[in-house]
Length: 391
Image (cartoon, rainbow, N blue to C red; front, top):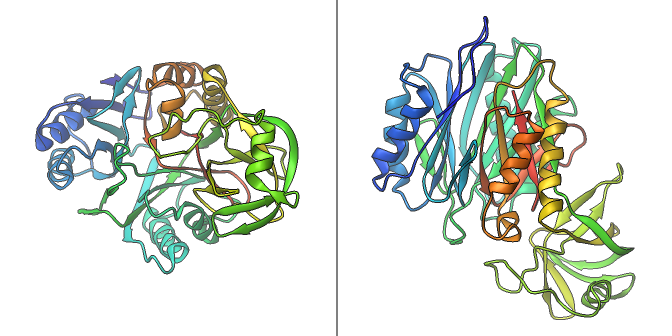
């Protein structure tokens, strides 16, 4: 349990976790720790990050009963963290007290023919339910993670948030099994779901993102693609260019996904000079990405190391709290699951970097199959990155 500390105008919030083997016990213990012995109130929100080793229907039901009358939402994970504690196969619960905050929740099924439309509808409903009575807002998005609709989700909610309301969140994971991810909310547990939580606040909300990768070699233009396959860079076979930047040799993969090289994604150069990461794997003479790389984009081959990853996480936290007017009461972080492999399978160093950037503020999060973070512009979905919500 981590105490967020009380102020004259807000109750304390907290984070709890459990590694109990029984699903109902894990859900109850995690929520109980987050509540610190005090009952939740109407208007509070509890967020869960849980391993798929549990019966998630049972876990969610028990957690929701124990947290009542607070609302409960959440996702399945590939590991989570609470403060300095790493929770590889358990359940983390986060209490967001309703003091100074209002939450609107919408949990929908994703229409595979129109994922952007599904996200748009969820965000619109969540906004209406939050009431829009406070000065500042953000949208927290928790979405299924296997169908790779992340960019469509970010595009869809932009029709609701515009450039004025920041976006943050993560795509659900399933302990790297690749079998099914889960979302929880409004009394339902789904494998094809998306949860939108509209947060209205009396004070500013911080959203940050970072990754800690750096470019190697020279920029190249994506001259031909076929869906998620990048066939040509600079008019030449994409794999040839990619290997040329890496000294002619493919680095060893540390990913559970066959042939995937998370240490060296393509970085699409954005108008702000930053890089959006697109993890790739060799495929024939080309490179297959997890989502389509825009034809005509300027890209660079990227690299990193553990120090770079920790620095990227710290910068994401610093970016988020820089937008606040007071020290944060709580931060949520959403970390790309590939980062865990690149850190040698342990997240303690990255968590320490996040906590340092947050000035020691309470922290919880999970390892995700994608991250949402946007303050301006229509983008907002990232891979192998860290996104941070600071309240």
